Length: 315
Image (tube, rainbow, N blue to C red; front, top):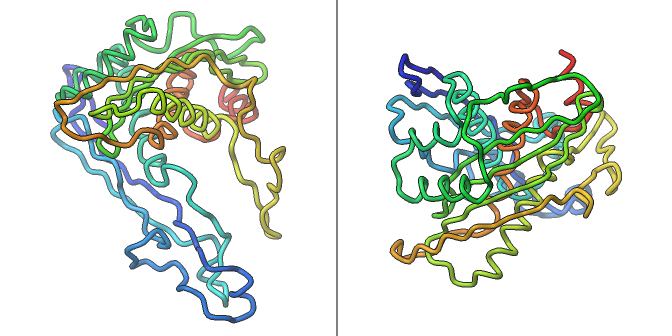
């Protein structure tokens, strides 16, 4: 990313390396040599493909020079396997969008910091679409956002006293505009991050069932927090070593922050968009930006487990 002398983005270039999509062949049939569907291939029109391209459009129209490239991959060990079976994965939620929006929105927050600008205002200054501006303004107001550059005054990366920060992210997926603000506390000595407040604004166009949409948004927000802070599959040469809900942690009730949902009913759009899945990809860049705001350090590795955060803060 390049910033010009006016503090605006002059160019953005990135290569997104996406995970392989799922292998739906029954493993018993594969081992027994029985007929199954084909193994994931490069050329496929379905989800059982090694191709996982760009999904969400670029939403910062004033940036004149943008190159985003998406790269798929095979499953680990698939090419060497006589059965064409690698370390089998499966898409969860937002496959591709998560890998695309995390670096994109974290880069926007870093660019705002480099320009000495407020992160929300920086996005507003680089967006023209009315609905994008609407969710940014709504989440700013609903979260009580204090306009200033990041990192915050007094940001520290050492000590046993929790320090606080806030971050924002914006995205467009499936016809719906999303923006969220995450307010966190991080204890530098332990690396533990707690999301204390999560505010999210959603413009799906026409809101059909507000209560059900709110519930879907809340569920997506919690899943996104889990992706950002906890969820990681571990493996070695013997196979998957993450085998249960202890070795693969997900958020518990104690990890759920105060969540505030702002629904923007926009009938003039004339259609309704997606209402839950995109929220999974929204939290991580906002939490990482909040960590930078609190400590002055940028976290690019996910999940933001305490040990990884500790290593970053000590570096």
